[in-house]
Image 1 (cartoon, rainbow over the protein chains, first blue to last red):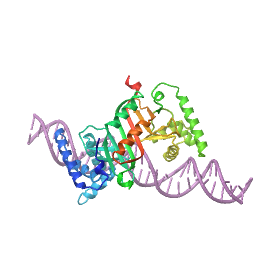
Image 2: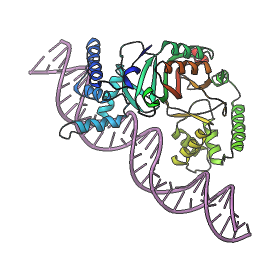
Image 3: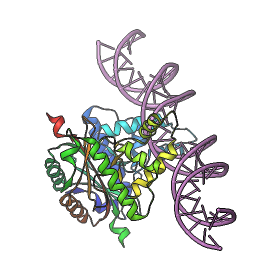
Image 4: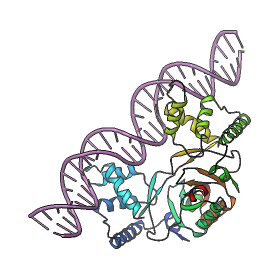
Length: 162
Length: 162
DNA sequence: ATCATAATGTTATAAAATAACATTTTATTT
DNA sequence: AAATAAAATGTTATTTTATAACATTATGAT
């Protein structure tokens, strides 16, 4: 089971998460001959600022703040970058939150399950074949052919249980 | 496994679904001493008009059309009924679609999984303990304590595969 | 250098959801 | 039954989320 849950909820050097994510993104875009432009990269870094999913307008606000002196980044710009990053599988959308989060292992097979802590707001991603198998099996009993899945679990992360 | 998938995707006498749902709702509200007012009932019936999830503004439009002669039902009214019906477990929200669907077995234990057909738009609900067990197990490997789950599967229903 | 394509800037608007307060309806108390 | 409290609905305005449409700029290919 591929997961970043050992990191996401716990104290860690988050700068390393960011640089690692950025490196993966650059390599992946290079391979695919698509352009990780400065704006797209800035949106990506903003989303990766933490392990908490961020709404589109949170991204707009953050980017406007972090841009000197005051260059307003407008919603269409952010949405376009989001669209690109989603297409490339570099980020995910959590539909139960209308929010976006960086993918810790882009390019891999994805059987996405998100574990969202209602206390601290952090979300970890798991790629659990076992769970996907259960989904497919459940669906097959209804003769339903699975194409994609949205699995978002809300509860308490290990830190917030203590 | 409790499911309405044998009905939802297939040709059937949908009037019976509606009256059955309405009867269950009345009994349930009576038991709980909460009021299924005319407006709430109208919203409920509008949602139950088919097995396709309906957006809040679709409900507004439908109700405005079906009200004679032209009595505009406004969004807050609809949202308040939706809130009530959600609280009572009479409908569910599909967050991947921003839409609402009637619950075929309210009052029961709910381990909700929705199977949404991308072709015909119909959605069936399954209450699959097996799948919930897999969710809990996956989460437990991350020491995550599950409180609620959103599982929405998109694919092709049996009818639309043919 | 020229052209086509892609990306971004900009303005406006659509779509989804809720806040705030007025009014009406229903239930409760006297 | 009248008075009161509580719940539900009506109404206006606004917030939040997302996209359409078109202008401009940057990038890559010929």
